[in-house]
Length: 141
Image 1 (cartoon, helix red, strand yellow):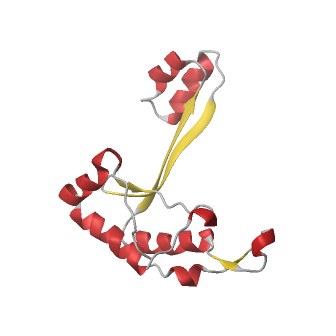
Image 2 (image 1 turned 45 degrees about the horizontal axis):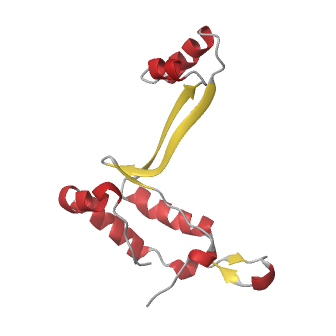
């Protein structure tokens, strides 16, 4: 695969280029190492493309996961409890999840379980791997 475009949210790319050159190089190497054609395993059921071989998001994710994990990139998942009471959330957000739930219940509120998940993190740099609709995938040579 190739990186065709970048969008530098809040100068994130510039930060990588200056402060995390090694990680940015790893990302570029991993993208280059993914052979997208081997991920063309999904048979379309869409009316106009029935039977055509399409890129499988599951296979693409699998390839990226294998390569990123080999370079010590790991999933990050943070669990916590919230409630409708904003003030109570602000008071409990720095506590461990078990304590958050206890304090929410003790205040007579309904605890709601939630979490933040990031696909891959290494040295506080995060990567989300996401594949969308075929209509938005463009190929260039």
